[in-house]
Length: 262
Image 1 (cartoon, rainbow, N blue to C red):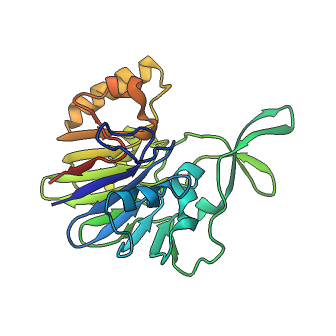
Image 2 (image 1 turned 90 degrees about the horizontal axis):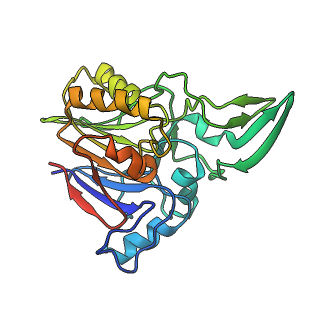
């Protein structure tokens, strides 16, 4: 069994009275041997929701941060008895939405957040990391996509090298969990296939950053998804209803949902 509990997402399930929703994502993934908290949303709402749902977070084995945007890792500082945290070192970069005009950068909004200064429980890696026999962190996923800017010694476009995916190797194929999917659904799937040597995709779950995607991109993606033919597509967060329309057989998951994938 692989159980996924949606602790936080942009929208609330119809049955989820009393729960909060936020722009962001937090999934608790449990295969009966290991419990992984995948992202923590922007604040403490995921913890409050877990309490209301009767879900304990004290025995989580790992927190896996998909990338360093505030809506995916902002809640980490609210988690008491913090377990091991797995992420790319770039989650600590100062990220901004903004524009460059001539040689000047104009920041519109900070899209990173303040993360814990105590990094004793952190395992930083740019490379793939085997969490268990079944769970694998993807490491960096190659692509030319950019989203926002990073302020270091100078301001540079953010190529989102810190964004990765969580992979579960099931007997039915790979189950791929995405935070935002900035790297592109096709890029992510192909990276996971190369990394594991497994071609079959049983499910893809999470945000896929398709809210404002252009039709010509979505036509190509639809054709690719039909070829891949995953058993399940569970969309949430930044996929958007527009993006979901182009994903054959996709279903939406919301705050408060509990899904058994296997």
